[in-house]
Image (cartoon, rainbow, N blue to C red; front, side, top):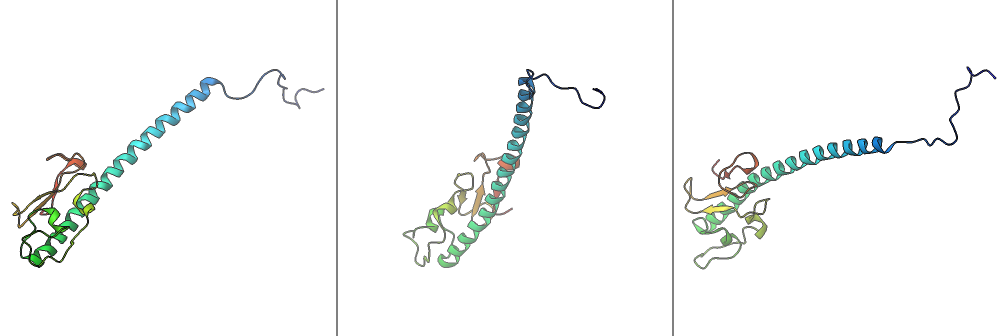
Length: 144
């Protein structure tokens, strides 16, 4: 027979496939890529929650304005939006829900009436729930 026409035959005893080292290398590479993807997705989730918290401050400010129109002044505390305070004569609420009083990270909004920047101040403290910070930990107020 002419060997030039036919490829060499493999030995029937030799197993084909991937070696353990090749499989481990692929698993490590997949792990590295997965870690990078998870980290980036986590950052985007926090950015989305931060943006939602800023929007929630403005929504809550609108509810407080509605309370003020009915009662002549802003509520003394945010809980007065949900249940009628004893000193209110024209309360038309509830003006919101319990979930409106917490930011997307689960922290309570800071509220002050009268405020330093107007009739009332609402402050969203960001992801860390602490005053100050930058990025998703930055504070945001209804006067900004």
